[in-house]
Length: 467
Image (tube, rainbow, N blue to C red; front, side):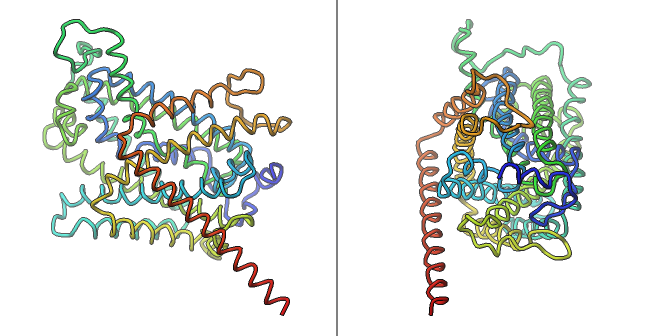
């Protein structure tokens, strides 16, 4: 199987039938866009309320954690350069179809719920400009329009992603530049923390506050793992995807750290924490209400860009799993449009599920968002375990990329990634953890029933042939 994954890496069309058009630059910008979502616009305020002016250190630690986990994805994607990456990683490592399909379905759940949640976030920003249209209608229209772009072609979708990502970058660069022009960059105390009861702070207390904010900030890095799901449409994916992963994580980490320092120097941690739109508050310090308006408009591009990329990733993941002969997902979902060369039934499936979630769970989307973060961390743990397992199982494979630092065959960084992921998981409220476990159990039941249904269908087909 591993050799087969490399057979068509350098051809214009993958063995699956999808067209390879995505370059390293496009894949990297896709990754940057996945990470630079709407999260940074709100999370920085909450994180500043925990870590104070030391929040920039929390961003450094969260970036290092993302890099550690990204290295695992990079090594695995160099071995299995196809869509439905997590599904393939787990199946190759543990040779358990039930486990791999469960992991794949959890990832689908996370992606589609994220698309629905961010679409509702988009509608909140858009309602400022068109208050007479219900927010739920705006969210549904956005899902439909972006699904149409997704169907039209991967090149067109990626090019739109590049445009939106650069608009997002302009907004964040505006904050950074404004800090040097209007802020107090050189005289700000970047180690001030929100403690008032004592004039002397113990170093362990400061460290505790910094790490407490890491769990929240790490949410702003989610999404980089979805780069692996465009492998079937990427040129030389076993080389391109690992590079795109690493570059996108490093670039966004640097941007996030600079934005954190800049926002603190402009308004301080206290005002960031009290503001519902913390970066807009920082922009207001630089250019008044015009800055707030500009950031609100850019937030529209940030949220719509995130939704677009989630729709792309989700449809390719469903396509990749259903295209596998061992999968219990209906193979019809892997159908490719003859003209557009896109997995149109998978695209429609993701669109309808996202709309259904918006309609049925609009009021509960914040809860669903917490559950998706819980599920993502579970996936990270399993993926790191898969890499450790493959280091012992597939010894003689020529890896295009390997996660560094090993003791003999044991890779240290995936082990560290597991420990850190578990540490962040333990910071969740009990209710969020319970909701997450319930969702995972529901997915396990779905996978089991789908497998049983497929077995019954196959038995009936065989009986008909005998008759």
